[in-house]
Amino acid sequence: LTITETGAGNPEDCATPGDEDLDGLADCDDPDCAAEPQCQAPAGDECATAVAVGEGSFAFDNTNSAVDGPNDCDTNMAADVWFAYTATISGDATIETCGTAGTLDDSVLIVYDGAACPVAGDPCLASDDDGCSDPNFSSTVSMPVTAGSTYLVQVGGWNGALGTSDLSISVTIPGDTCDTAIAVGPGSTPVDNSAQVADGPSDCDENMGSDMWYSYTATISGDATIETCGTAGTLDDSV
Image: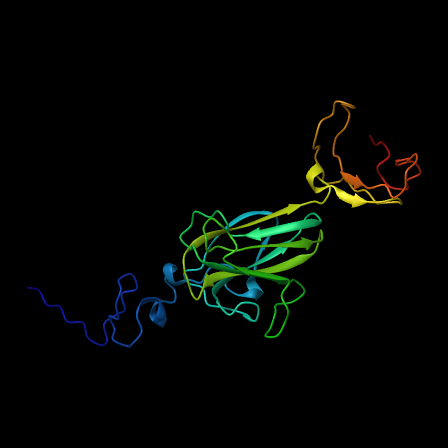
């Protein structure tokens, strides 16, 4: 039988669970451990230090995070991490933690306009809790974004859930694929294929590339002329 007494005045052992110095604060809750690596707040712990990202997948760990900012859009938001997402293309963005292999399997996601860090009462652009099917309690939002605009993404654990996860951001451009063809009628419609890739066959013209798709519904019967003639745009060679 071994008995070891730890009394007041002994140093706090930040790597071992317990309150070794008997000050009522244990491990990372004790100021004596503030400089220890395992007690450091993650990048983006506050909105003011949001991690700058574009489209892609970004790992995060909210283990040592404290909630920063309002929770008007979801009162379950806690232990959050902030990202400042600047869209590189215009379209419909999907921002989510779906499919993560991390340990944080219950997340909350809120997106705000990037003009300034939100305060209580500010509206959000989108929010979600449990929108994913894998893992079931992860979150996903879809919203329109504009190239060059910045959006503040607040992602945290539901009611303080902690762990590692991945924030994924992707953008779908309307009309980039045949199944997202833009509905149009008679008239002039602007075309910008700057970020497009070819979708569909090229049997009728093998030179087709970087295409846009439109779904034209005729309003009258007759002969239709569909053309890019007379454009003042920068695309001067179209198929």
